[in-house]
Length: 215
Ligand SMILES: CC(C)(COP(=O)(O)OP(=O)(O)OC[C@H]1O[C@@H](n2cnc3c(N)ncnc32)[C@H](O)[C@@H]1OP(=O)(O)O)[C@@H](O)C(=O)NCCC(=O)NCCS
Image (cartoon, rainbow, N blue to C red):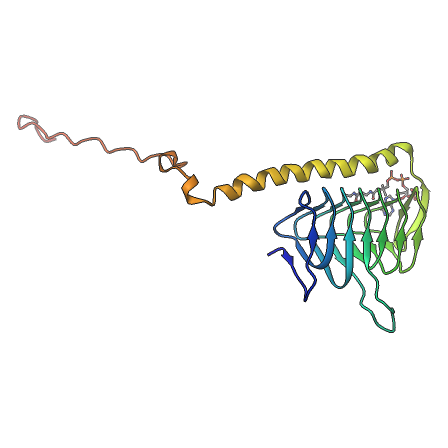
């Protein structure tokens, strides 16, 4: 079951959002309108909360977690992800904040209390150290991450396009899920409409005439 409560905390998922059946969403998690959680992702809001805004995609194999309340981190630290954010494949977001219209490149790691301001692109495989603040409108790459240059107009446009693209894709997945579930009702399967080709009827055997010679 991909959506689970933890103690009294149940995920709240907007009816238009898509959670793939192989993803796992646990506890105090909110997922906003038209957002999507792709295969094998884990969103675990057990010891603090996770908030994901609208039109945000969390792509395959991504892990999102939080930090618990202790003397090392009083109050703990939630993860907050804004609207229209593209989180690439196999990203780790840990107790951090990602503002609107960001792109987090594949395999990136964003650590505790880091803040990625709006309209930032993070290169694939980058590491954002704890507490680092990435300035709005810039490209960042590397481990540890460094600011490279301002994003071009085209790259800024791409951030919006990317969010819309994943919104359209999740609608296609949602459309696939509904008829697939309908076929689980045996009454909906007509016996005469078998997808398997009917067996070929054997030809009737004719009796040899007595005048026929055996060869
Ligand atoms: C970061 C990225 C956008 C850079 O694009 P770009 O047009 O190549 O940028 P630039 O040409 O200005 O490169 C700037 C510098 O960063 C380096 N660089 C590019 N991507 C890098 C990365 N992921 N990690 C480390 N360095 C990187 C370039 O080699 C270049 O270095 P140089 O100045 O020493 O030559 C792109 O490489 C990337 O990682 N995109 C992420 C895509 C993704 O994961 N999408 C999510 C899935 S949908």
